[in-house]
Length: 327
Image 1 (tube, rainbow, N blue to C red):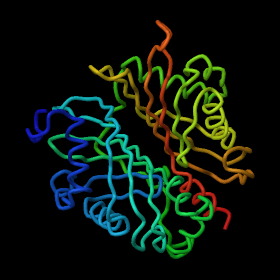
Image 2 (image 1 turned 180 degrees about the vertical axis):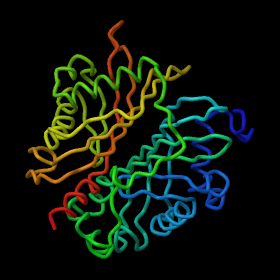
Image 3 (image 1 turned 120 degrees about the vertical axis):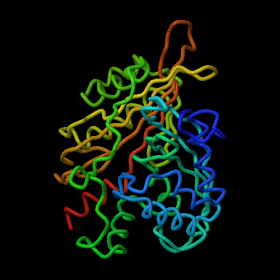
Image 4 (image 1 turned 90 degrees about the horizontal axis):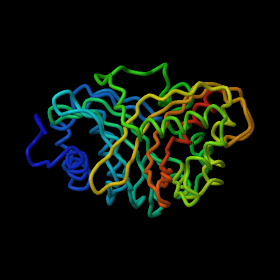
């Protein structure tokens, strides 16, 4: 861990450790040390440039959810300490909606939701980030439909002319990280599976998924097997059948005492011109940022299949893009 604080055993320890230190231990000021002053943080909801914006957003979240926890389920990473490392970090968060904030008046609801975050770090500091919270799960647990929440948020942010614009290529800010991951076989296998589905080859599901695969999708959906994968990926692609699909980043890992696993970051960019998960086609342009993680294994000797999958994108930001164009 050249260039990193020696208190961290390895890169996953660094990622999980600073997350707890910042959020649960209230070490928000350590963001001055752990985050670069000009960091770029992209989430489907916005693009934030600069550490001061990150600190402000962190305090706002903790003010609204004072008991928030972030349990690190996995860190799938690539790179080297001297050249920089990219982590794809999966978290299970819990929080009580105890105070007013971005989600409206407090409801007292206890939330469970996942987060996937890709972070580039070098010399003990994160300087580039892609962050996806399962906003669909959050707002549903608070009693909102994602589309209605997006409409209300636009109004609370001052209307279409003044609200925070969702992340799209139009407001992209280039950060220092230029890598695309590694060439490990598991990352390549996951990228191939999703690419084939985005090319309308859904026969890949019974060929590559385990029949008992456990699957976690946006909106807090937990499902399984071939039908669960088909319903999610078909519904997504059917909504945007002509959108351009791109794989942005691919990581595969073989680590002791862990199953083979992979993480990919991907985008869909194009028109909402099909019937699918987002209802009546509007013809409006949409940009979807997604991250998928998966674990592989052979329950039956020699028959290696995808056994667990986690995919996230932000449904509320998709609806916000559509609503801002439809009025």
